[in-house]
Length: 257
Length: 229
Image: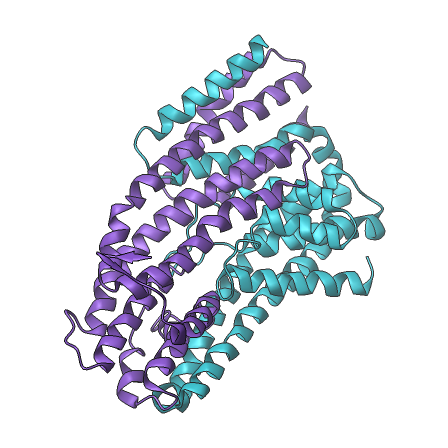
């Protein structure tokens, strides 16, 4: 792997702690709480790396700087942890660092949370779910497998590569992330999701019309209804309310006619 | 449904409940995955798949961001699958109308999931505040404390599952014989309404420019192609 002009190899003593940190990243939110959110989870994630730098007896000062409030997107936490481990390595070697650990965490956690929320929760997850729905609506039991693969491939790459890049590139890892233009990727995922949503809704409308022995063009009448519901959802009306009202209306109509 | 089936479903509820926030976040807790998995473990994956289709889109647009807690569609999916499969032995009913009724019973009960999830997070905060290990303990104690908090999320998942299955059984015992005829009459329109409402909510919550135009063009274009074909 290259960092700048220099060939970089993962130092052997760091391999085991980084593997442990990767595995621990899956438990980041085990103690999530309203007061400090992921703080203890982040310390839990960092501990194997800190032990490899400072030894088993970690001073109260080191522990204290990682007990502060912390919250970011869980899939980007390994990237931050890798970069912090690099900072801690420099601190332990007595080198000067550009920022201190606390400042760095404050600087990166919110932007990475925003990128991760938009990319994974807002972009990749709906896209994977809609593709799985297509398969499921054809009765395929591969739908759950397809969903898990489509979602978890980028998820696991983000966790694993993030940790390693963070460790190698330290503070520059964050700049490197910006070059991937992840917010643009997220917008593209959302656009594809919306197009697929339109296709799946039209497919259901067509099937419904055929079942009712109506011309499929009557399905177009559903479009304004869906758009009205979308507008209602944007205005804050809950899915629960919308589905209960719709179900009650349909049941009422069925009872009347 | 035997006691072993309920225990199996309870184990899935705990595992999937942990996957939502506390452990993995691999999304196996999504309805499209966890409902067929529960169905498969209980002997009928297709019932689970149908439930996954009905529920997947409904709360997909609600993001688990910061301190916000989305409705517990995981336990709704598992609970609705268990209810659907138990209705045959309880009331002698099966088929898609029963599946829809079970989903309709489970959805409002899923609101309890948000309450239990909030309690679990408060419990974590209390444990950390009261435990001396958090402010001055050794790293080993901190690690144990962190892992012990998993129990709160596991209990929250199990409690939600219990409320949905218990409450849903009582609701369906009285309401299913009354409503099943109307559900059969409403048929496909009721079944598709779940996906259409879910799609509408997702469309409303995905925040991009040209979203409505893209959706409308895709909808009208596909319908025309299917009509011509």
